[in-house]
Image 1 (cartoon, rainbow, N blue to C red):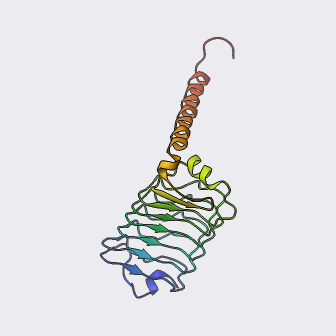
Image 2 (image 1 turned 120 degrees about the horizontal axis):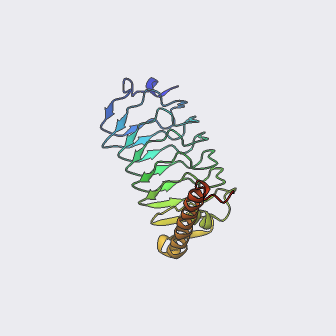
Image 3 (image 1 turned 90 degrees about the horizontal axis):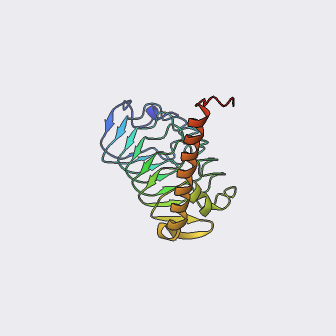
Length: 196
């Protein structure tokens, strides 16, 4: 079944002003969804979705796509003002995540090997626990520069203040690497008549 065959017919590329709940509807595609969901959330959990193609572009509430068959977050909403839950899927990374999450971000119980592609800013909590292939979760959070209020990992619970020094040191390290790349590029593209 696809989205436009549910009770939410005729919503293709519209703006919808309420919650949409198609959880457990055995949906395989979000084709026919509204373009924006304002004053509400979008719940498509417990379905057979492998992709978020055709998703709403903007969701002012929560976006729930947990307990499905997702192998990628590409095609996700561009903006989620509430929370984003993609737990219990088959994700190996977070490439395609919304850039800013207004609430919490949960990606637990997946097949994550890296947090690459993570949101740039999470205004609530970040939860990545119970991903057996994701080692050194705290270090991965720092490496991927995931900024959130609190974190839940297999290594325990902690807040940003507890990792702030390491986080900022790694941020500075990344800036130095970027600066060195720029310097190398300048010298590589400059001929000083030295015959290099």
